[in-house]
Length: 94
Image (cartoon, rainbow, N blue to C red; front, side, top):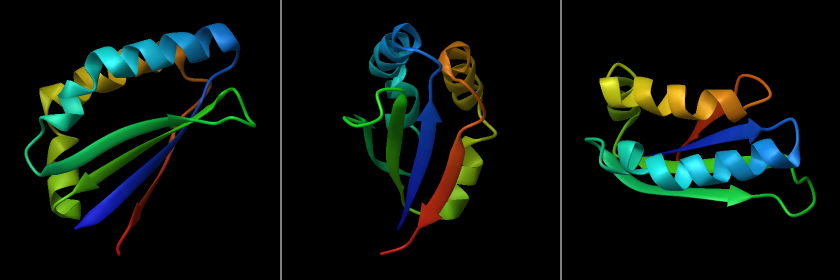
């Protein structure tokens, strides 16, 4: 099992609100993916334009397989307009 942590940054509070909304609306694209165990998003208190996505996968291969699906393309397309840059993504093991 692995945990993926993605750092997301927005440029302003309006974009932050839009990103939070689109994550809520489209989280099923990730949560229903084969190999997904859990999905959560958290907004920073101290840094209002910072959010993290925490996704647990059965394996790194499962995450990589998801990245080649239409659902992943739709996910990236939905989030893209609200991001201030490319997300930083890391994978962790327990």
